[in-house]
Amino acid sequence: MRPAVSTPLRRTAVAAALASVCLATPLAAHADEAPPTSATAKGLDLERVTILDLQQAMNGKRLTSEQLTQVYLRRIKELNPRLGAVVTVNPDAVALARRSDAVRRSGKARGPLEGIPVLLKDNMDTADRQPTTAGSTALLGARPAKDAFLVRRLREAGAVILGKANMTQWANFRSPAAIAGWSATGGQTHNPYVLDRSPCGSSSGSAAAAAASLAAVTIGTDTGGSIVCPASMTSTVGVKPTLGLVSRAGVVPITARHDSPGPITRNTTDAALTLLAIYGPDAADPDSAQAAGKLPADYRTVLDRDALRGKRIGVWRKGHVGIDPDIDRVFEATVKRLRDLGAIVVEGADVLTDDKAVAEHLYPAVLTEFKHDLNAYLAATPGEHPRSLKELIAYNKQHAKTELAKFGQEIFEMAEKTDGDLSNPVYREHRDTVTTQARRSIDDLLAKYRLDAVVTPTDLPAPKIDYQGGGENAFVNSSTNTSAAGYPHISVPAGYTRGGLPLGVSFIGTRFADARLLGYAYAYEQATQARKAPRYLPTLP
Image 1 (cartoon, rainbow, N blue to C red):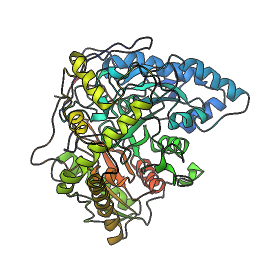
Image 2 (spheres, rainbow, N blue to C red):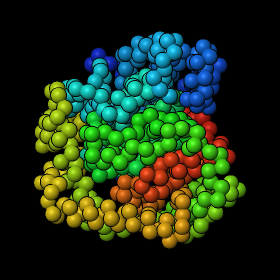
Image 3 (cartoon, rainbow, N blue to C red):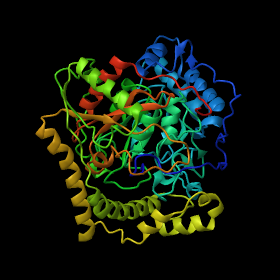
Image 4 (cartoon, rainbow, N blue to C red):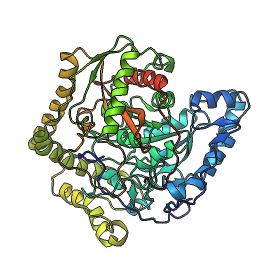
């Protein structure tokens, strides 16, 4: 969950070793470090190729999954000491790639991700030799009995699970002073564009790894901006799907009323293909019951260069423009490009957040849900680890030098004071109020102006690591209402500050508008080609 203020809350670095897994310890970058080797595999530019290109190369015997996996493993070994993006390398990755090559040779490819290496955020269960820790040493002894539903879908589609990506510990729901991209198990994740800048959070490692081409695809989770904010700050495509489109079963929770796993990739094509592979109904997640058929079977119906033509796109400026000159410059260019692409641009389509409702209803609801959902996850997960939020709080106190050295656990303690009872009428009023208001803020706007979607800047440029945002000119969180409503939100690269920091724009819509938003993002991406490869600068002047 990203902070409610405009920029990521404070974050720092520490590292811990993980037994019997390959862990690269994050190191500080130095100005005299050599630039990374080129991101190529058998002549293919990994910065630019799509999954479709990689499949064509593997089908044509120009490339194998094993070769591709080895390239990514070498890049992780080379770059992760500077980035801290990957916390665990799957010891079975190469064997999985070889198995995929054998499947391909048999002519029985399993799905659209056959042989494609994927990194998972470290809050997704895998029933293999990798731990699932949510960034905490408290879960090093956890042994999930089965893969998370989305991980199973990835495997069924042929993906190679390459490893786990670092994250803001406990998805940024332990302390209001948490540091974006820091965890006790993985240390500090750094932004590949400028290494002393924040990658945002909490899907920090997933976004940094995607930006640095450490995997073909990464998966993150979003509770309140945790996919779209990191995507914006790392010039990647981040998709927060409609609530329940992708099952949350087997994902370490904050709240089932917000949590949404989704892809983070270098291009919209890969995001669409991955989302198609992982979505669908799951009996273990009641919110996924209506997911069947909500995405088209053929990705080509989504990826349309003319998707914006004739569409009414609302422009959300309030709380986002007039704060940063680079954002203003890039967003004005975005609006102009939308017009050039045939969109009917509608001004004044501001999505307004009720700050009073957030304070009085959202936070109390989420605290109650967190206690309920986390207790259920911990109780159901095999292995040696705390079995409840209460035990987790005690564990952190007992291991304060590792877990509490940088910030406290105030949010944990606040959540523990709730009853965790989702049938409590007081809780139900909080949840119903905030969800209803969030949905109306979007749906009423779409209806009023007959809009197909809303476009807005996603976030500010990346601040320094350890920066605490806010202030009277704070950028309004573009995710508050989409998260509380459970509506889709996609961030796509839009440009850069004059110093080279990435900026993203967001496409926002109503429930199950995911395919349409992907089409708009694709049309915009293809017309602008805004993304540039990271330069791994130590700092800005």
